[in-house]
Image (cartoon, rainbow, N blue to C red; front, top):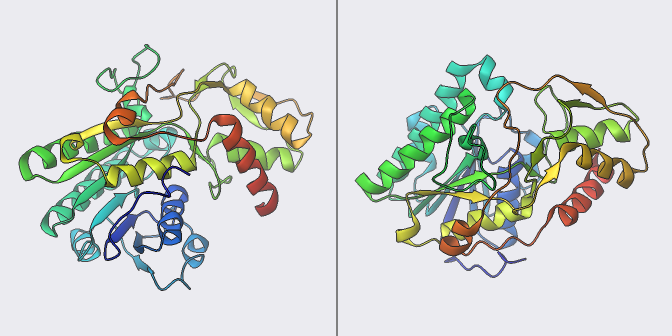
Length: 324
């Protein structure tokens, strides 16, 4: 994999916030496999204890239970840290519409606390999760940085605010920040349960159990589904990013485009199922089509994703077959 050759100093310490979650735990795993020291900060509100227990036997792994809404916790977690990968946030567009104040506290104030802690503690690079939702209702495809539309949800607003703080902390304080606009990430350890579960693990679990999944809308929405290995690569390459490339946000995707109904039929075929889906109402706040231009990340960060949708979905299905 293209990130395996990325070298860091042996004394470097990585802090992964939200490290008990789907993306965070995969980042912890990749760093530990490379022999690096990893500190995981998570309050376990959405992350899972089992994603922490996976690594507790590794002497390079340290778990800190704490909340990024508390600045003192963030300051302590950043002590001695070289690189921060800030994945701690609450996801889900529909849930943010129901809980806008909660999202402001977690996704904006929490990220700001982490940036401030990183600044005060002399962290070298601050890489943080943004989202394709910042493109809002801008109709042009592929989505390109600098061509954003009207925001459609509180979740999208929180991510746009994080990007603006990232720019300010770079310009005002010299903290190298890199925002990664994730496009529909999927892969091992993504939670299939709950009302706000992502579509791929939810569909897989229901189909394995011979249940009919519900597709919101007509199924003709399109997404740039992005396998977790590509996201790991983007994070590690951002940690090695130049000072000149900092203070900006980057699309992190493969650059493909899959329609939901085609995704559904792909999963049915792979799992040997012949089950008709249920078509439900559109979800408020959802973007109709999403497809990324990744040329900026390729040029400025050296991002070169290896996993297209077909390769990623095969690995994901194999993982769920063994672990559900």
